[in-house]
Length: 179
Image (cartoon, rainbow, N blue to C red):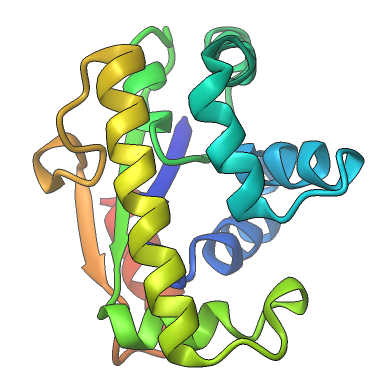
């Protein structure tokens, strides 16, 4: 089975992906990690890098094709990416798409705990998150015709993580995956 995980910034996607991979012994592909590495190579913040993607759509499409290819060739895989559900449609394997949502303030506070965001206020993180989601929405519409990459209708399981612990999120998702 291929499990895709998408959702809001700060919703717990990376934590869930790591926990699922450990429990299920699945390989992982973290698309955001690829972008972070590329940003670091260019000495850019992730926000600056995302701005550059708008000017160079071929760069993002190359990364997206990598995930699409991997989902066609490899089973027992967890793919964490904003539009992973979209590319999973071409996979010959069973796919389970998960959307994690979070209240914007809670998500901004959680994102502010990441190493690259230390020193930023929750308000600064909330503004950066809103800008990034707007840019993503515009890019995905331009690149793939996707109106809303966070549309719950595209997912098999939707979970609001705002008031849940990591363990509660994991338990609910595992129940849904097994079901």
